[in-house]
Image 1: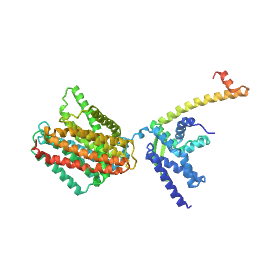
Image 2 (image 1 turned 45 degrees about the horizontal axis):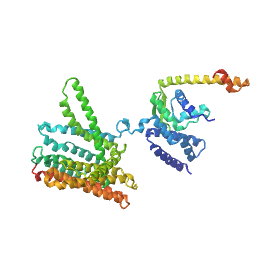
Image 3 (image 1 turned 90 degrees about the vertical axis):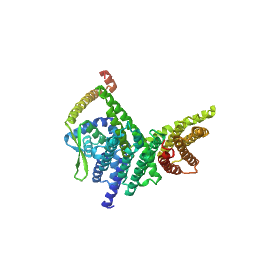
Image 4 (image 1 turned 135 degrees about the horizontal axis):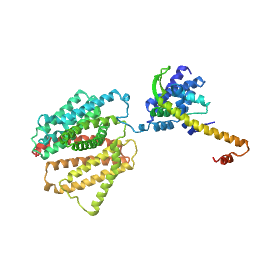
Amino acid sequence: MQINKDLIAASSTPLVLAILAEADNYGYAIIQRVRELSGGHLEWTDGMLYPVLHRLERLGHVKARWEVADSGRRRKYYRITSQGRKQLSEERRQWQAVDSALKDIWQALSLFNSAGQPASAALRSQGV
Amino acid sequence: MSSAAQSSSLEEQIDKWRSYVRRRQAIHSIDVAELEDHLREQIAGLGKAGLTTDEAFLVAVKRMGALDALSREFAREHSERLWKQLVVSASSDQISPEARTDGFIAFALAVAAALLVKLPVLFGIDVDHNEGFYIRNLSFFVLPLLTGYFVWKRRLATDAVRWLATVFVAAIMFANVYPFVAQGHTEALTALHLPIALWLLVGIAYAGGRWRQVAGRMDFIRFSGELFIYYVLIALGGLVFVAFLGMLFKAIEIDSAPFVKWIVPCGAAGAVLVASWLVEAKQSVIENMAPVLTRLFTPLFAALLFTFLGTMLWTGRGIDISREALIAFDLLLVVVLGLLLYSVSARDSQSPPGTFDVMQVVLVISALLADAAALWAIAARISEFGFSPNRVAALGENLILLVNLGWAAVLYSRFLRGRGSFASVERWLTNYLRVYFVWAVIVVIFFPPLFRYI
């Protein structure tokens, strides 16, 4: 299963903010965490994460700092700000609203389907 | 493959990748560092999973995404980066110490030039009663400092500095020892030709050791054009500034004229150095403006001159030579020469002749024809007009320009027909700069005594 681009783009902000809410982190590890969470279904193009992080930084949702990693290389870490946390809970409310709407309609659909009616007819009779 | 050899080839690959990414304007080097860290982590992770270094590198680069798309994303987030910023954008930690010193020296010299303009006032020489002094010495307020700036910047040898200083001192002498008649013609000619001669001194300092090379002189031509454009822009800004200054103080009924008397000359002198510094700072950052303008105006001028010649032939009207006509035609040739110089300066000498080159030759030839018609008309009436210093100077300049453009047209059309190289056009145009210098020197040194300082 491949998740389409629009969904990936829309979910990137809450995902990145949520991962940073767990702990400060850097780009590569954030992408690894996304893979892990989605069971490999969310395939980001790695490079695209960075413009997203920079946008969040510009909006003040995250703050960046350079640190020297164990390997001796410089690495850019991101930390969520209090404003970022507010944004995260806002995003969360919105996603939950979408999620519950979808959940309801899935439920309705499976009910009608089991009753033997075609799905489109079921929707029409509901006035959706 | 040993692991040492593997890691060295990986470093090479990463170096290549890095230089490739760096070429993208929207991705700054700090972002490249971030992406590189990501790439290295990815390669290490893939290596642990059993891939060879080469495979890991390829997969990691692929996962990073297509560079075009990535650069587009960066550009969307950092749209300001597509507009090359000259002075403001570079965050302070990115300015190199050399650039900072350079800016500091340039501004210090600009302040010095501003003060120098007002120095004669201390000795009781004010503008209102000593117009002649100021128009003759105008170039000395600025050009020695500008030369000094390039002497410092190019680290000129002591010999060269001594020579430049000697010429400047000699020039100051010639401008001030002659007993000019107040507001006479020869004084005006000196005021006009001295800056031309001294500008070549600035060029020698600018080119450093490269004045003898075509490329060095060509760079100076480019610099002069850009400097002119920047100066005009700064002057327009200055005009707005002075207008607001007047308006604001008028609102509280204070006469701003005394301020303006200070600000305008000091600003005009200082702006030359600031503009020079800007041109130097931007040369690799922003495209040159002068060639863009020539691109716009070469076809227009070519069409104008062509129509002019056509109309003249059609109607049979001769050129009505008034007193100023010769100077007007001189200026026309100067403009055409400028158009030619700046399109030559921006042209890649390797590329084959194109339509624009044909246009260039048409422009030069029609200018020459128009000028020949004007000279013909003047020659018929020169005895009637008499040889005033202005007329001799204008005639001399006309001939010099005529030779310069005429031979340039010959060389250029040879190049168009594939019988000559473009480099010969460049060489001719840049070598000829010396002739203007020599002529300007002749006018400054010999004309005043020749015409009895009238």
